[in-house]
Length: 402
Image 1: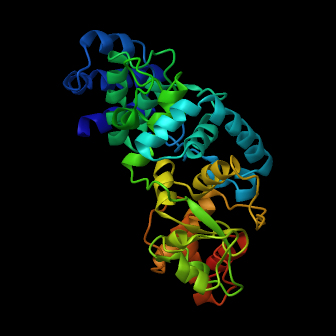
Image 2 (image 1 turned 135 degrees about the vertical axis):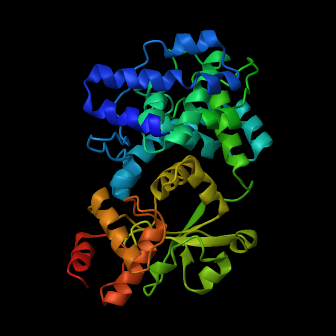
């Protein structure tokens, strides 16, 4: 580890060719791990020959160089109205309806096998790659190797790189088709190699789970991932509700969970009629825009989808898109926030909340459930309007020592 850290430090200060030499040495050092995973020497030599790092990727931390920062994913830097855009949802829902008929037979099999409804897996495909229209821009092996060498999560990506080599070794994917996002997700439904190994499904019987070309395989793999993470058949992802005027937005955390009937008793009114089975389900409150936009009661399946992508807006997009494939109704309450704090500002806010003992989650610049609830608690203590929304006004109050 000391030698590897020294190599990185030297690489940062030396000419580019020296940095590449250190990277090449690092990749070569991974051969024993690759061999133990079942990668042949021929595959290792072929796939790593000429492999170079991509230092323009986000989320890198090279000694002596400025941090490249986080990836700026849309889920964490856009306001809900911009991310869950009505026109986009309508377009994808119409396409999803067509695809639901085109792939009816495999989708029926998928639901029978894993309990995940067709609209949900189609919505994941639509969100991830626009039903296959979007092609990931990066060479997957280069991304994974760079992140393993110089990323913020080196150990994780070291494993992902070895698994990627194993996939190439076993003929699961060709190098040409092995395209990925900056974070290494690949295929129609965007899996990391570890996800592919754990959840890949060969539904069409070709001998390999082909999530790059086979729609049945990709959708079945997405469904299996949800099922493996705890998907409950017959349970919706969430219910939109009209919150009471005096709603306490600090309750919008997963830990505050109670039967929907209790939320209804507290005057959270579902926008559609619920069955007796539905009102008995446990649920948590979600207010993505604090007190300003729509409110939701989220079920266990909400948090299963969130394991696919850890973003409330991602789950809202997928859930709402799946609903719109069978019901054209938009959200009852419109989105209203017009701006989102930048990641650095949210990070500063989280640090301030942590110093006050109000926040104990990750300092990541992402205004998720825990951050919004902690912010509401701060607003209560500071005598500010309690809306659980990270705004410039609240940040200024923090900076002023309130």
